[in-house]
Image (cartoon, rainbow, N blue to C red; front, side, top):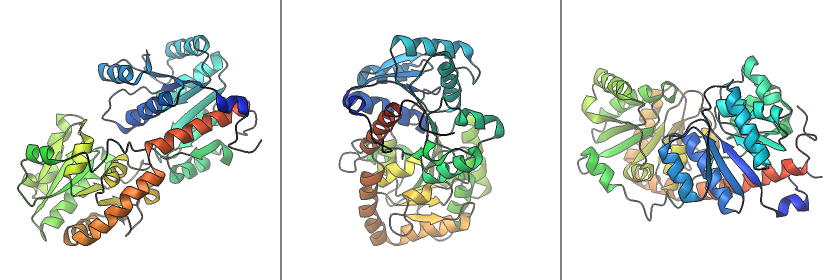
Length: 389
């Protein structure tokens, strides 16, 4: 059978699918992508359940989407009790597909696959860190039928560090909900009022404030930008707690831009934030696939400036849909931001290409269709029998 083709009986019928992830906060991209898959597959007629730690927001979202929520502690990678309960659900629900989205979910699902037959186990890989010798076995196991990398850059890291057969690792880009990120429907005025921005303020925004996301480099870049154009203001979204917000304020003060940097915690109004900003930035130095908030800003027709780390070069076409800068270079980021600030016509031209690129390659609809096709292909192969380690 040709790769990617499914037997007619597999291609025609609904599937029983579990989407498994230990995280349950919608402020993180992994939860959004997991739930996007669950909701999208349910709309396509499949029987879908989410397996995650219990949480009110996740429970409410599942009810609204008509998706079952199966709560599990998922305490750690060796949580045998969670694996036993997951295996029981697999038998009771006659589950054909389990898709695990993070490390704990991956380990627990793999344990469950040793306890009960599982026709299709798919695991996600969304970070570009090499696989360690301890973790490599989780990906090489014959009970793992496919590894879904969120970009080609990560696929290559997995192949090199995991020593897997090329056909076992596939790329399916994360998707953007174009109905939520629609510049014709979503406005950013309320966000700009909340921030107290004066008319004419040029708002630079990065969503993601973890150490490897390069936010300190961005603060340094903003200080350089202000020497040439004082209109700029930086918004950092996604601080885990008050201690991180305090650190942002301290770093901003050291660079002399304390009054021109705002740090916020996790937000659910990301479409409105994307509408409010003038340029979306991500200066990550390691660990990333394709930055979701850049996809979303591009869907809103906004200019983007990002490091060339991970898979960002697969999303952002330098000089066509945005500007790629060398990772770790605050001066290059400052120059790119000033380029956008100083050339409104160029920013508009980039905007026309950005939305189209997301529609064609990075939409939620395209992603869910590709996931369904992958599941059916694995099932048609008779689980992992035709895929080498």
